[in-house]
Length: 257
Ligand SMILES: [Zn+2]
Image (cartoon, rainbow, N blue to C red; front, top):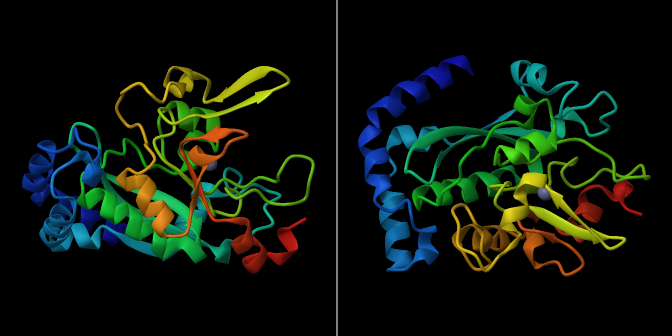
């Protein structure tokens, strides 16, 4: 792991010209931003150099990684086997066109899909500000979301049940969380998570990092079999993409009602 990380950092330094080139298009929302989307996707795919390709990889949860998550996202009462999780290392581009390394832990059953989605988003300069393990925020979702972090696995049971939530299974992914908050009205009172995401409940407004139905991020998750929380009607979870209930029943039959 350490050797790989050094390799990536070193090669990234050589890839500065790519990062600068990305600035030109960083203001758009990827392929849906206009122009010849399919041509640009192919062109950018071809442009990924060896170092960039190598920066996208999947590993099992090694002891080094486990040390970072145990007692945090991998809670002491975690009933999901460590073997069911995978660590993803990726690159992503922020709104200013700066390239960053990212880390995400997801369920092994969607690891290749999520890696492919994040690679395509990178190839198209789709802006994602941060992709850090929620453990960097002591597994505190609110803190992670207020920092606009994108993440997946964080073990928890669904309230008042012994069933594991989809994030607890690593089968849901949140993207650009501050600008794409969760909201629901409970007993006439509006809940917003993160609380600092309230200004971004106005989905007609224009602002950076907003996920729109039909944009590249949304389309890629849908193409890979996810459902988008922005399409729910009883609540809205604009940041959220999850595997449908049928998949949970297939993969974790003991985890359904
Ligand atoms: Zn979510």
